[in-house]
Length: 254
Image (cartoon, rainbow, N blue to C red; front, side, top):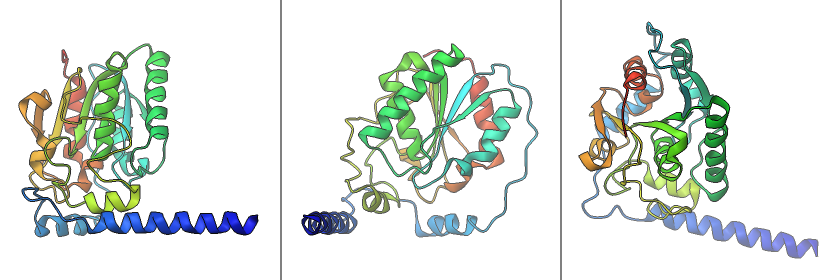
């Protein structure tokens, strides 16, 4: 009986590997665009840089609960400089609670929905969601489903607009998650603007996500702000941190 379970387990593993290999070999659709190789190599070079210099942080005019959602393959610690700056400004900063972001599934998305609701009840105030790359897609969909618990959404280099293959990460995403980038395990339409103030930070120097996908169109977000940083820099670049602090203090109306 144990041998049977082992054989079934090996067969399941083989099927998973074959599926992921097929996903990795999918061609980029005609018309899909990605940042240039030069910009992508600049992303790799940025990994050699040390911790960014701290920025001067003023007290927030509107302290509020904030949840930070990391990008694909990233741990919340990558966003620690931003978390520290937001806390210094007076915000109540919370991690998303799921460790490394390995992509969406029914279980982790349901957990995030519950967590945002619990934080809103704890603070007696809706929560601002700040999402880096894939984390921003989580943020937009949470706000779409429970806008009463979300004050605003700030995305950073998040590919919510256009073809989901307009980037240099979609094959890696498919291999890790085991599903096609345009067929996530939860029903979503990321291009629909959530019914809360939604701000998109994007960069013309992004080497992972095409700028147009992260900027979006007027009906897909309330405003878009250009910040000249790498994609990896969205997690901690002082210019990005300063812009997030500024956007949190804007008194928006949905």
